[in-house]
Image (cartoon, rainbow, N blue to C red; front, side, top):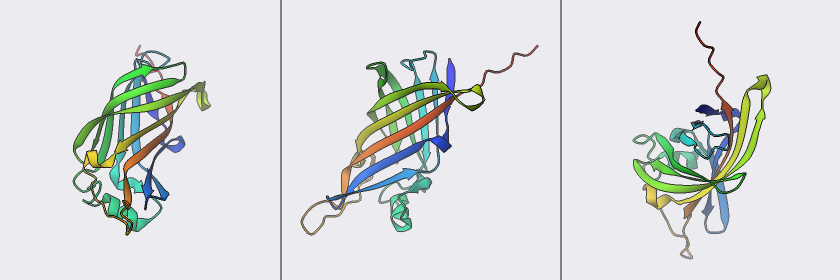
Length: 181
């Protein structure tokens, strides 16, 4: 079994949501961790664990970020972490994976399925192996209690229920431990 740890400098956890029905607002989480445990080089037996600090949400607008941290949305004071733990990984092709797991936000856990592209594994600086992934998915924010809503004058929602996720990730293989003599 090999452990892989996300490289936060070369990774992003992004989201997009429709605003006023006509435009898209994007954001990301600045602080997150993730690991992959896998024995197979193709990651088809992987177990993935992810955690994001909800306080680190960043949409480049302080007022909006504070609203997202409030009880109207993430309720970061009561639920400071968002987590994902995989329950299965299915290999669809040489580079495509289907990742199913439990996503928890605001204390609510729901099963989600994410599409992943495995971009390959190469030696990084210092000879350490690096694996690259692009992961996308969609979820309904109402399923997780993020239920603030308002309507525009024309009856459209100010913020869409659907949230698109995009995770661009580099994972570093753990260095082999030297055996004790």
